[in-house]
Image (cartoon, rainbow, N blue to C red; front, side):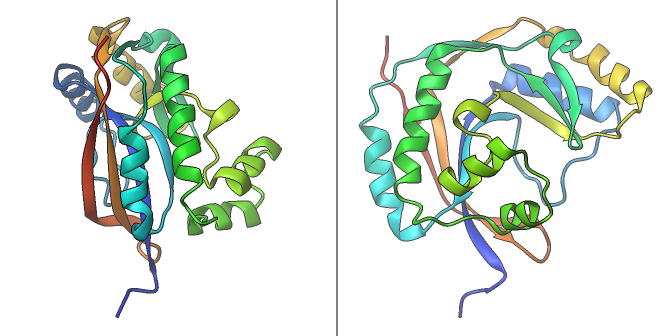
Length: 217
């Protein structure tokens, strides 16, 4: 019998290379930043996130394999310019990149057509509480996720922020100096189906995980 308080979440991301991931994780630890409850993901850039029917996963994988996007480079913004504390998370921005936006748009177009209009419980809740802007509300209703298309702002989520804690913010910024302006090649992205427990408000397992390789230059 299925768990009525659990949802299947489609999670599509670009993984951050280990040399930078280690720096970010160490900086996070030194600054005393905690992870989300049940959060088990290494540093990454989220391309798309939505509630999704598992029965449509084969069709999504076929569509992803047909994408014609090629390898490209991404650059991490310096912490002095790209580190922010919002809603209430620490974000480290990725510099704008046309290839990244094109890949994001391709993924959203392919996955959105297969999600059967599903919307995550957390988004229903935030909509009812008026926590989203007018544009974010439009994106949730049309694409099942607020941070897509014009609202897509590529970043690495560091962890939960203590708002207005300048000591923690400055400690984190200092320990992220080694990532400033560093670039890395993107030659693949990850597609997974995660189990989200609505009552616990956390991820509790993985159903599937797939790596999609981009075409070589």
